[in-house]
Length: 289
Image 1 (tube, one colour):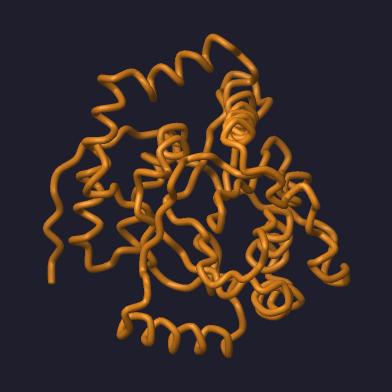
Image 2 (cartoon, rainbow, N blue to C red; image 1 turned 180 degrees about the vertical axis):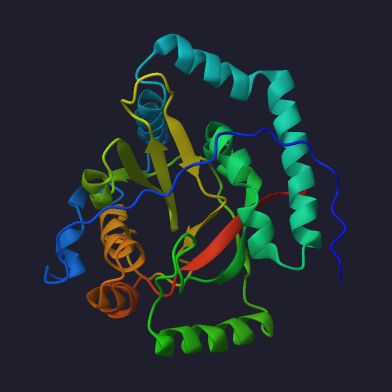
């Protein structure tokens, strides 16, 4: 059936290039539990500390995105938070949310919003409590390349997806606040030249944020925040480690190492008790204002 989408005007950004490079084989490294940094753990529930952590994470991203230019940083923040612009972004996202609900192919629709997310990442990360994060599918294949988990794991996820669709299990998740919990630089950053990759955590949600053109002359850095991100709804672990996720992505979905399949399917999903991650997309809550 042909989708009937509501009209929405979305801002555009420069298309981001796919950067590839060779690197050493990490397939012989130790198990993933050795990568978990103790600082990934939640050490305080104080709202003041949560706010400080949240601001520190945003400042890290802002300083990279605008090369620590305080005037450009403030200009961007004003663009994202002034009442008129904020109201326009909310209105746009409400329309996006309605279109997502109407879409037959929800994954493709979500991926079509790369430009909106990349330009308005500050708005997104500061309004996490106003979204419902909706299940799209279990993570088995990378969104940019064709590297995938084992066929056995893919078949298992097909079965789990069918069971989920026919059950009353939750298919969306929400947060009571927007405070980000942690940030780690991805191990792939050292291979990508003029690029830095960050893994940002909010509870069981992981964002992978790429910033291109860090030092290139006559051009500005470009932030890439994907509309589809990882959510660990099945996790029984005390916390999700961005460092661990970075290593799994690096081995399996960037380089396609066979060892990466084991680290994803056995070490991460089973031994670390993270469970099977799913791709999720955020829609504006009906009750949000």
